[in-house]
Image 1 (cartoon, rainbow, N blue to C red):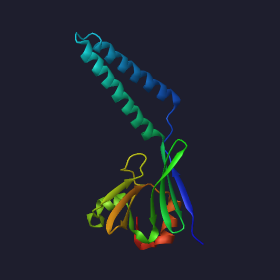
Image 2: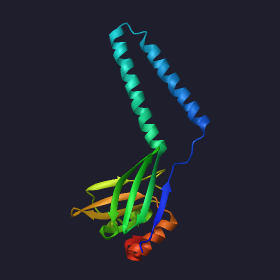
Image 3: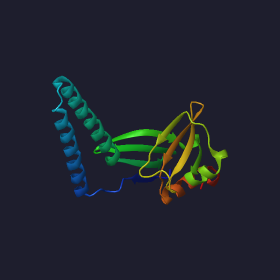
Image 4: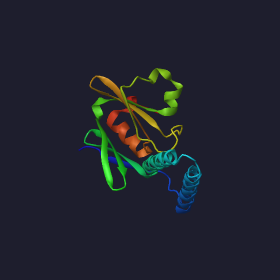
Length: 174
């Protein structure tokens, strides 16, 4: 029977008051900048710049929403390690790595100390929440299409123990 272990990683909740104050300040800044643009002598230029400011504001809001509302789920089951990304009610599987393709999983502090453990990667996946300098992050290396790929994730102790049982102590470097 295959071992099953699942973990969800979320950002720390931000209080609604901080969100409201931040949004209010942001709206006031946009209002002030568009107000200053209305005093320009060239009305056409002011209109274009106003549209540009609104477009940039929309892009910043999309980036912030993605940043603060994204959660990740790591699942170890059926000899596969899968990574899912959730935003609201939508969940999307990002990658699914067969355990036999995983070369090693190394703790980030250990990887920084020992440069011999690093490998060049064709593709990098990041499933991070918080600061990457944190001691709880691990980088995994796996081979796909004869190239090494990496994933950065933040497994719990329970997930690490499950990975050690499945992969062996020699492929998990703490």
